[in-house]
Length: 486
Image (cartoon, rainbow, N blue to C red):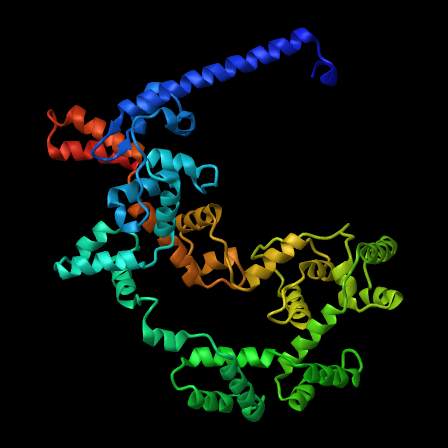
């Protein structure tokens, strides 16, 4: 190492000695934290009082958890594999810990959660997932059934299993739950056999017409009376999207009889017994399957685009496509030259529907559903930074990412007295005000119903222990709750 890094022998020895000292100090801290954790262990709760450990060590909680050595500890880790094994207080503590200390827990941090809760990390992950995305499980359904047979009220059951957001949510999930082995459900949701699929294909070929699509559904419901209507509809759609070799050959032939840009998809669809959109979609899929751009191909297109842009500060995609004997879309998808592209950041005063409609039309014509949108092509067509195109397309679909920053903006605008309709206009050109209302009141509800943090609980306990004998209940409440709320 001395020869490799060209440092002196003395400097290397000093570095190694410093590293050994650091490791020795960390080992001593690890032993001390583990001993303090053993002393702070509560047999009744099955957990360690980590708040007292952090006070004694004068270190952050996360650092104490990292220093803890389970191999030196005297208490055993609990196993809570089922959600019904968890007490309501443990679930509350788990949610508070994750939200306050970690935010989004990574794979490396779940062991720390397990150490704090003194529960297997896999069980902690399962419980937190259930709290975040609650669902009725067989063991939870069985536990609720026992409570109901014992005449326990739904309010008390909800307090024992506070997974769902409200009592009605828990009750509805309980009554809607069905065992996977239910024979009636098996008949309804069973997979389609080869014989059933062939029968559906026969019905589609016989009765499906683009101008009268309901007839085939009626015939299919008569043929499969025990299946759900939505399941039959999905199967018909799947059958329509499946093309055999003869249909594909016929489609390619019919398209070849038209000039590019003048294709009558309605006439082709009528000839093939399918909708115009399905025919257009299938041809686009075939067209894309025959075009696989290479690095050399992208470089050629990018070079032509750069030369044209540097000469006239604009790009004529039709001219480039003609020069390279490619379609315009192929050139748009292959180009990697991005110099001079503008930004497109939404603002209600500067937003232009002309640009928005131009982008929407391009996407609809070139990437009909379910084809994924190629935003490289969209960015080149609009000559706008790709990330801005992606975000604007999302806004035009009415989607909104309710980040903490967006919620804070909504709260601030409400403080200024702005109505929800105007707030929605500030955030997006097509956002419905009801989504803003839901996000705003969801934020308020989360703050009101959020469980007390471990720090707040400890502070309340300190205040009560100190002032309970000298103050009346009213005075103590006035002292405690402003502190807790802070």
